[in-house]
Length: 442
Picture (cartoon, rainbow, N blue to C red):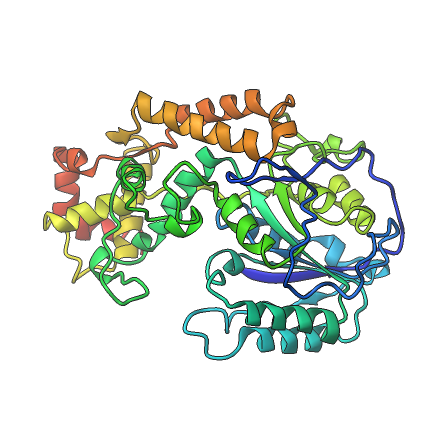
């Protein structure tokens, strides 16, 4: 999901609290960088190198780049539907249409030139600041040359007229990020049979394994997620650090956005809309803390007073997809005869509507106690290193541990034991009579 949303703030409203301190740290450095304002030699500098003014007079291009599975799509979808961007012309905002082409390899054209043409066409003289949200910069752009990046900066500063570029990298707790990435890496299983899935080299890719297997593969340095760990062994580098390292060599303003900091969730006006435990406001967290201070106060205030109805997308559960895959492996269902999506939805309907069970009401393969302890230890170490002041706060270590145990109780570190399920006569009969059940879905 790629989108751009733009704003210009004319009215200045002070934040109710001081902006939370952003940190960027690196495993090979003992120095902590406040606000990630790092001077890097040998790169094209912003045309205005003076201190950021508190009145927001500089034009910023804020590049929100992920990494994947850190709420990027949720923020983009909120920006598309948010009344602030639809019905507030007094803030002189505009909205950039989605860029869907030119960012995938092999590039059919220079993505920088596409970027320039699209911005120039849709900005149409707009003089405010811009947020460009595109997690492809956190996945596919890490191989680009310095020459290409200098071209990008030249286009941004000289042709599009921005004064500064800020790179925003999101931090998500590792124990939440890992199972989410497991689901993402296997999402194709919902619509395609395993023998239909191909990777970028057009080779068949076997991905129907459990989260436990997924973790074991990465821990043995056969890294499925190597690109997110900066080439290091599992547990040494957080994906947020990987992107921060890379982009800090190219840009002198790289900021970590802590998506877990709740201080901007509520205001005196929005609290009446909040039910206990249901007032997570990712929009306000981002606008109030990730954007340059003093440039988006009105946007921050609006987001706090108008919390989104639903911020996070539901977590993908692959249990039905894996059950279908293993059933096909045992010739209980024909992958040549039936579309994968049809089989998955039929299994889901039977399990939920006929058996009255939930997605985790199966025999499960779960991380054992030692694996869970190690995962929590790694997750805590990352947060302490990346965000030491937040880690020491009431929303840091203690909440981190509590959320982890909540995830354990919710079976987030478990996957269906499909082999065991298929020993059950109820499921054997279901697949034998599959044609009878599929009509209830289509």
